[in-house]
Image 1 (cartoon, rainbow, N blue to C red):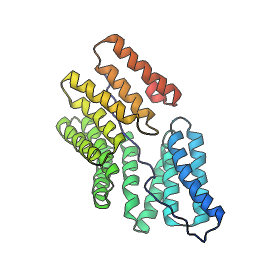
Image 2 (image 1 turned 90 degrees about the vertical axis):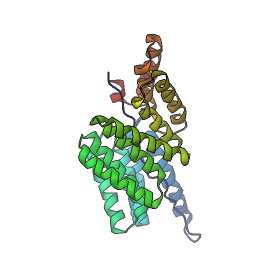
Image 3 (image 1 turned 45 degrees about the vertical axis):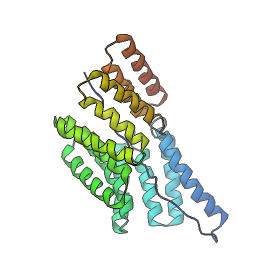
Image 4 (image 1 turned 135 degrees about the horizontal axis):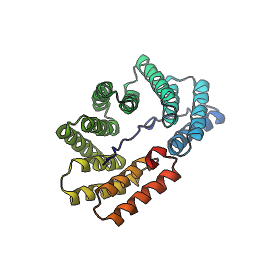
Length: 267
């Protein structure tokens, strides 16, 4: 029986763009637009990748006007996110481009998200060795710059990889660490992801179901978490012993998959 891993993509959030008082209204409008484009890239990345990419390109155009290193980092990160669903090579290219700029400008605060997203791409390509190296790096830098969201995500992803290579005891420790960090810092989506992954290390079926159902409650609070919610519903279906209950959750997952352009989930 196939049990689905739950991962989460880090977005370009956390960057605060301020507009000098002397700047022209047009530029103030563009700064506001950049924040809106970020939300729209996130919201549409799964259900409408083409639209997501169009918003990301608007961010790149703005970066060329602004000519700021941080703005280019954010714009190229959005490009990487927008291409994640159907053009992973392009996604890899833009994340690396953003990371090179961050390295050259010594902007450490931007690096954890980028390194983590590159780790996801490597893991999806079954390059677990390089993915683990990247995740270790993301965790260390995240701790230094206090990026607890990426720390939690990285431990979750590390747990998924450990599960894949049959290192279950280490996987459980990774998930528990991810959950602890998420709870301490009120990262609701990360709490949901950790709970959804942790259930696979739980031998008590009743406790496993409770973990999954609690995970859904937390994931529902997020934006752009359709895939995570759908996969969690599938896992509930796997865990259910009642065929009618299992079918109910499979149907819920299928509905989300159809509405959210998630062909991998539908399969």
